[in-house]
Length: 267
Image (cartoon, rainbow, N blue to C red; front, side, top):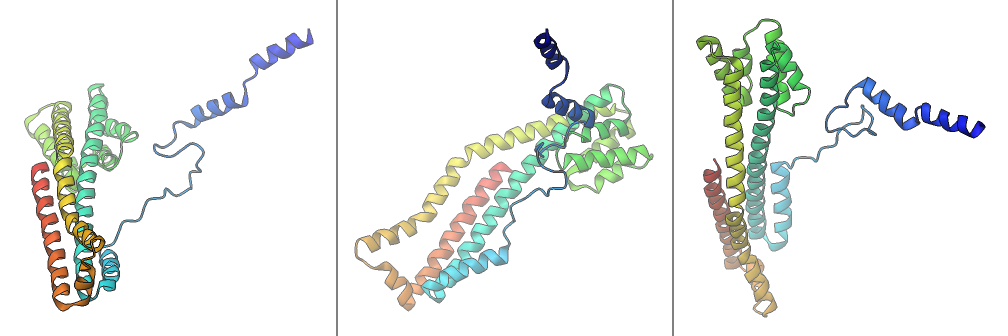
């Protein structure tokens, strides 16, 4: 009988895991992107962004081993690599921002169609949105709640200027706000899908440009293995130093040219 009562008690009383789940439901959902075991005050680590002067200085320091010409060539190559990195990350950040804004608008439109006030709808959509959609939706909620000019508030945000035009279209011509914002969301989705498709298709040309840029280095390595000693000529003679700088400049020009062509296609 005692064993039976003990079994019933174990079934009725909530376990520690169940109590933790119930406490979590009472507290509400945790912020996105933050693991449950991590304290709320724990800072989110982000990798440091490279600084252009430091990158150029590092390239110059490495190139000094090959003489004055090597230092100039190293600075040119480092600056080109840094510029290419910045442009690549900029394209990725713009694509990520467009996707986040489209998802935020989708939730905002759903709230509007359910009959919510724009301020409440924007605030509700901002809870699950990602930057920069969070800032945009919170600006809409704050401005709309106090009866301010939402169009002017959106015009101050670079990523939301097209939303400002959509808001004005709804206010001036009486078009339902949900329909206008839905059209903006569909446009963002199409642009993002097209950008991803083109970016994937341009992976081959970008790889080919990188391989062509590395061929001179491969040629120097083959020359050293074959006993021709090109490094001694490039680092120990004046014509070699001039050729080293000229070769680095041509490599940088080729990388910049190919990068410009691929960016024009994506843009």
